[in-house]
Image (cartoon, rainbow, N blue to C red; front, top):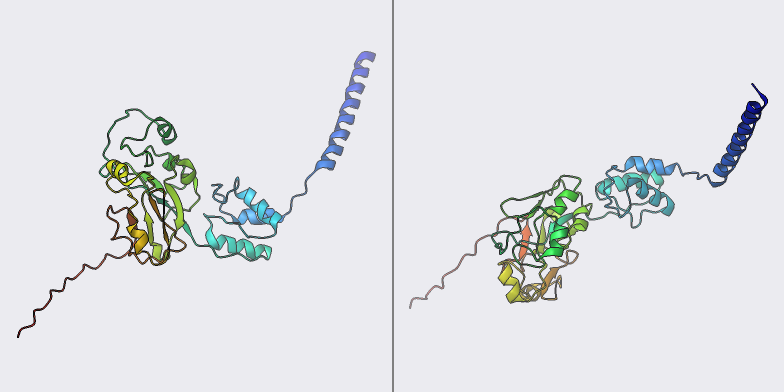
Length: 287
């Protein structure tokens, strides 16, 4: 080994040693000691990383819970109350019982109720169709039927009905993660309480046009007549921009608003069949 080679080896070794020392010191200076409780919480979460909690994933939720030292405002939709109770027990915290939620389709503009007026024969997404035109049925607020919500669902809880052209939500699979809500460019999917015995009442329409134009494009559109508002004794229904809305926090599921709707825009799900009204003929008193 000549002198030049020896000097090169020694120089490189010295530079490497100095760099190693610097890197070690920097690593020690900026190292982050992670709370071991984060791993405990993360292991109890379902690992779906659906974003239903409003954070980037299950790990992010675990970090937020440990950092906050509280479960207030924290929720894991796929895990539900059982998972949150389990986490609360592990951390010595209290978990507030939350009503289970579910995705609800607030549009009934099927091909029968809203017959196609145009035909766009090409593959497209709802986001693109929304920027392009009102939709085949002509309703500028209704479902576009391209299935962006179905694609966004990571739990196979939705599918497109080929007969109606509308998405169908499978109650038993929906975890209320909210991915379908974010994917819909027209906000026709809403998170609502599952309700007692899985029963729900809601206005299946978001059309804010006046009665005439709304009815022209869809036979079952809300026409803003206000009959349901007058019928409700619990102030659960409000009217704004020609559209009725039922507040699920106030609704008592009495169903009295359903039959007064002239366009059948109010839907009642998972209720027993209504008993037919018996018309009692007036008896004529014989003299």
